[in-house]
View 1 (cartoon, rainbow, N blue to C red):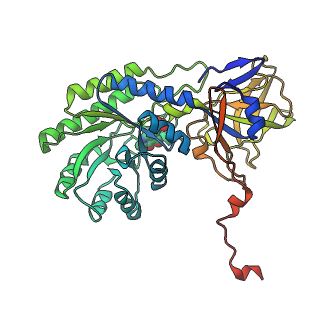
View 2: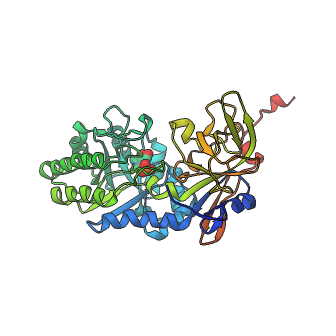
View 3: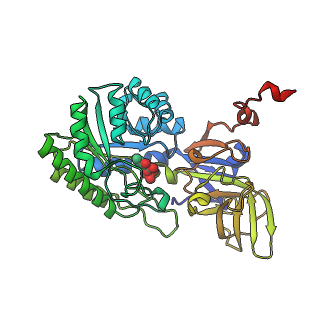
Length: 419
Ligand SMILES: Cc1ncc(COP(=O)(O)O)c(C=O)c1O
């Protein structure tokens, strides 16, 4: 969670009053601070690259806005993509294909062919995918996603590395997978695992690195494969609560790189952070449109719901919230901050002590950069909102608000229903 500057009781982001941004661009709106994106990227890249050659594959599922991708392209980042749509966005943002690693699950032949066409390296998730890829191409560099049987994460829905999940080649089949890849004339250059998301502890990363290192050693001794990279996936958590500590990046980098460089001849370490790079760079600004006192509680009705930020409703996630135009006023009443979606589960925050609210106040929901806009929807036929980039006192619109026409554009009414 970032500390925001306060001037005259107003929250400042990127040198601009949040309330002024809300007025200029309308709400709801995601506001991203460019400097914060650059800082986060540099922090993680430098922590690892000081110790061994490092490649950061930004997990663009967290936020795939083209302007955000441009910033990371300028920083020298590479990409973890999970769909052909993400690949296309990254190519259009200026990433060359060799800076993209595609890690899909349940990948169709159609998608495999499109990736081969675009020269994007594929991180294979299953034996079926390997055999199907061999029907399309050979001689390509590939890597494998292993199920490491090490899972972690802030919610059961985001634990991906546990044995029971759908992801990766089972640990006991991974050596056979490389042997088969060689038979099929592929060149296996990497080994990957991803434990889950929102992991605040170094331990699970050390554990998964141990598993990856022991597989890399077996690949060397049994098949003579010297890997170009070992990819420990993403999942580095960020503090969403005010009293949480950030990940100790130096310790994490030490634990991971010492294991890889002492235990294998792999040349590079790869990481795939999404949340760590973009999560705390962005606030969601939403206006109080309605206030309701019920026998049990106060509801602050705002113009963003789970269509705009789904994490609280979907994962029960906590996002810190403040009143951008009453930034330093003391808390007076406890509110649930709820949206316009017709479901009881539609909330952004519960039981928050805030200054007394009035219609028109602007609520800032923190840490909305990762899995915020990218998981937003048009549920209840509500157009997706604008995104704005701020930097040192100036702002740019980086995504236009959708219109009702945008929502209806793809619908078709058969002519027989028009009579
Ligand atoms: C394979 C893979 N890599 C990286 C990530 C990024 O995770 P995070 O944003 O938590 O760093 C994910 C998230 O789902 C993933 O599935």
